Length: 163
Image (cartoon, rainbow, N blue to C red; front, side, top):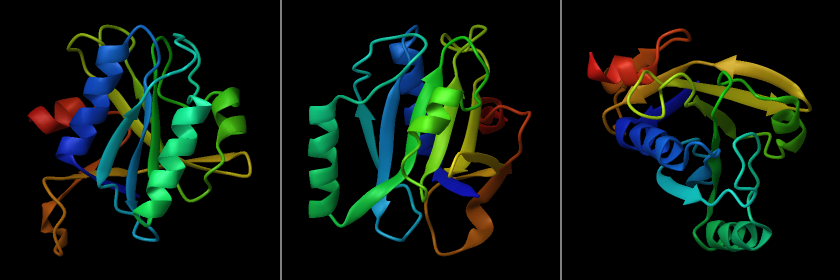
């Protein structure tokens, strides 16, 4: 299960909308072994493509050096699909190199790039196997679970957040 705070969730969606019609991409880092996505890091899609994303190799090297300096790791690796559902493509699966990360996909198709409902989904991708996982929104990270708001597949988190 991915537990993500509302502000980070909204920042990922805003990035996907801002970069549309190209795919957006980025990372949300957190302390090593915490599984808590705390630091939102939007990246440039070096491919500048509506059907593919690629991290710039120089930016990626800087990112991993920064993560090492801060004792962080990528907790979430996200990107958008501009014309298809929020499900990993064969290319996405082949490029998934962080087995501990949550792979978040946001679909900005069918008007979602403006203000329509957004499909926001999370997956684990390990050894080419894709497993969708539940996304739970929290107002903020606290010690208690009372702030967790479950989100299930089929209802956009954007709609859920506005309810």
